[in-house]
Length: 167
Image (cartoon, rainbow, N blue to C red):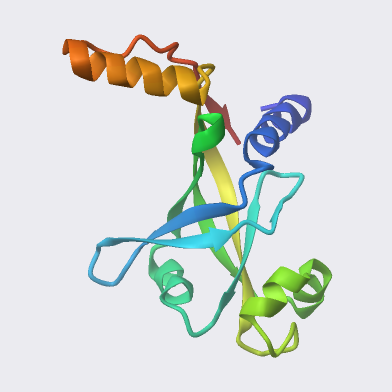
């Protein structure tokens, strides 16, 4: 994939998730079960990697040691936007990077600040993403769903856009 094309793909991913504050971060635990938890994406970098703060005391931190393949899902129901990012999680202990990305919202979760030895980062090296964008507004969607329930039919809502972003 050319650098220009990669840049376009990263720009598309960023535009899809920029206004979505929280994501569900899914790992596989020691019992080989999927585990999801809400996380805040701190940054989507120029390579399309997603950055999250966590603690060394979390199951997330431990899960990605043996099974680094993860999924991060973003949803903005009001805008009918859904994005699923697949990738490989990496544990990052870089005090300079931790301090550079620090912000007041992170301080609320980690009151001892960026020098807390348990505060670390997880970088998800994104490999691909799928997205769904519906063109229909909320009122139209609700009306069509109600009509479908009453008539026993399928809602007549524009399916919107579905695509894959290769990273």
